[in-house]
Image 1 (cartoon, rainbow, N blue to C red):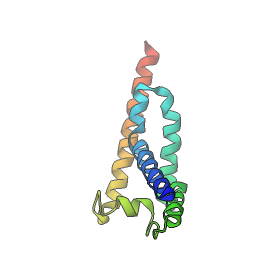
Image 2 (tube, one colour):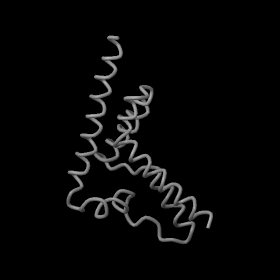
Image 3 (cartoon, helix red, strand yellow):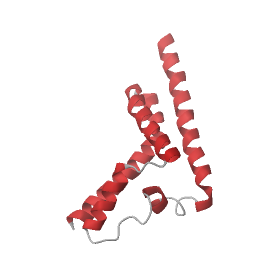
Length: 120
């Protein structure tokens, strides 16, 4: 039971992290300090998506699920929970580009707002 709860908690944190990667730049519009951790999160997301490095959260969830007597994650986190569930499996590139576009738009908006604040 304890490992199952741990695995579920890590899964929820992982979903939160992915949401932060996609949308955290918009948070920085109101909280400018948030741009630094968002840049780090977005950089990790970019490296992970392009090079294929497994996120430590995936490894932790997988290990906790195995300790709970489950089979673990059959594939990576995104392939298990998102690909084929939230978007069709053959649309992975489009989903990645959408997230990248959200990050770029949020950063451009952040820069414009920061410039406007500086001129006041």
